[in-house]
Length: 348
Ligand code: NCD
Ligand code: ZN
Image (cartoon, rainbow, N blue to C red; front, side, top):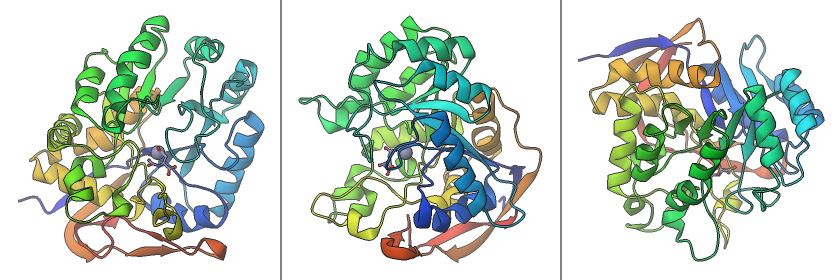
């Protein structure tokens, strides 16, 4: 039985670091283990321009623990009015790694997202030319579309036409959540890659609402069925280059999770790599962990993998229940808070 594993340092290709007090509290959990992270731009207000991106990156760097080599990769929040010249400037100056699209009102802080797909075509054409990655929250939120079908409908109605219109545009289907999505990503011959969260591979909607409502499991895209969970586990542990790690760690103040209208997002950073290792162990695929966590992501982004390594051991510990946040934001509840976690990072 394997009880110790060393892999190249992983990256987190989908992370919500937030801003200010929340960011200062959450950042160390990620910076300790991961080499880089794609930092989602859905702040209030969002990271919309190169100037916003530069300022956000500086705030993150200023909050890093002393000596940390963690590299935040900043993304541009796409709106109907995004200026292709500014996107190009941001990319060429090394401020923006990618552009992120939220369909308007699909998730947390997406009100300024895209409403008119015609209007973003100039930006997509420019990104295709530049070789800049396009990250998509793949959910169709039109009225009449069931929340469990949003991913499948988006693929059919938006993503397939987009890949045909811009065949040179490399896309990331963020937080893949369904079997339909897995099959689709595999069929694109490398044009579309996908990040996969730990919790979409751990939980089903029965865990979420079948035994009392567990508001902290509410996330977008919603956690789906056992068939979907198994398909995602197979995909992640297959080693296929189109699937890679993205925690979607998304802390929220507990009051917003428990409000009359609760907010989606799971704070997974404190147990992120440990959760993935457990999944790969359960699937008998620990030999594929490094591909998923440390190699496939950089390859899809056209970047080098990290040079150094981290080591995990089977050494149980108890996950923190909550993260304390300075200022008025109180605490954020942690994924698997209070549970025993089997694997532990022993060298990073
Ligand atoms: C994310 C957040 O809280 O910012 N929430 C979530 O449910 N995943 C946004 C997102 O990635 O959809
Ligand atoms: Zn997210």
